[in-house]
Length: 233
Ligand SMILES: NC(=O)c1ccc[n+]([C@@H]2O[C@H](COP(=O)([O-])OP(=O)(O)OC[C@H]3O[C@@H](n4cnc5c(N)ncnc54)[C@H](OP(=O)(O)O)[C@@H]3O)[C@@H](O)[C@H]2O)c1
Image (tube, rainbow, N blue to C red; front, side):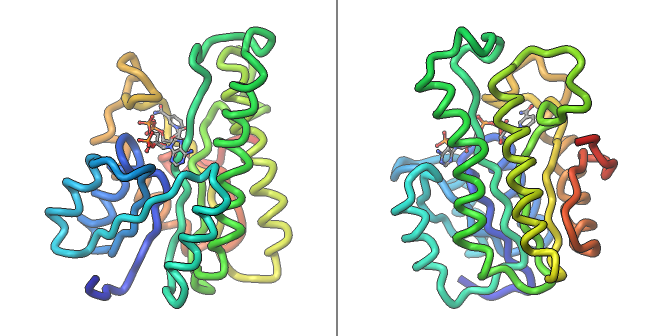
């Protein structure tokens, strides 16, 4: 892969927002490493084919500790300017109340949305440059302060847990100058967001990337929407 000044690792880039983020970072001249699950062909492979070698694909299921360790091993010696964990999921019935969600499904959403992103960040953070950015895709629904309407109970809880774990991680790292971000992108039409979401990826993703790039200038952790405004915790 040719070297370019800036390299981002986007975890969970097969489709949806992760794929669109990969495309937008390429447009802005970055080198991108994007991850997919399994060995099937995805939209990211099509993007790689048209990237003139600036997009590399790695395989990672974030719920598989062995695969996280393998990716860390393969990336040894690389310097990353940003790591962004985008992967996420929800319950099979997104509107189910917590008591109606089978325990296995509850655990799967919590592990995928809260624990595994942190395991990825813990494993890869030493590859991120001193002035680099470490981020994860949260959601406005992870805000406890803003939850006055309820609904999407397990998803909300998983993103609130992610936010709390990132705060603990950032607190451990406060002696260093790196920037940390939890992104609340808004409700966007994707597989997860569904067809009724008010915004398309084409309008949301450039704004998200603007916010991520600007955040690199400010160390410490912030929970931001795609307009760069702080989201109440
Ligand atoms: N769309 C919205 O309105 C919205 C709003 C707020 C926050 N978000 C967050 O944005 C992120 C992306 O969501 P999206 O809307 O783009 O949804 P999406 O189209 O359903 O994409 C989800 C992505 O996460 C990946 N993923 C899921 N589980 C994974 C695992 N165990 N290991 C690795 N990758 C995994 C998927 O990979 P596969 O293709 O292999 O399944 C896919 O690339 C999520 O964190 C979501 O919670 C979305």
